Length: 115
Image (cartoon, one colour):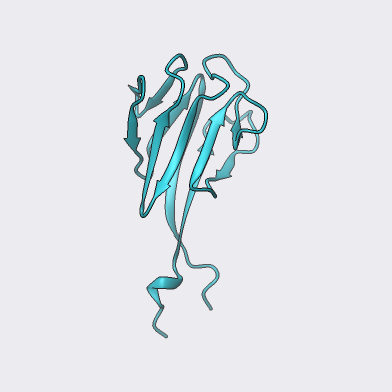
């Protein structure tokens, strides 16, 4: 049976590489995903180097971008520090560090709903 490509759903996750933290796998389920130490953030990180409004992950079409909101924090993608208002396109398997917490960005097509 042929699969209709319109039925394929792209899923995006952050997989925590710091084994002591939970949850380990977080789905990026919104077009604007806020990261920070502020209560109510989509991903709340209470550690040194993470500001209240630290960064945002934006989904635009088939692309996903990480943008720094507060340049006082410490954010790296694959060991490259992001500064000021910098925006970086994310690719599957990128390593992202917010302060001292590291995540792996993972994206792929979810076909589990197709019979």
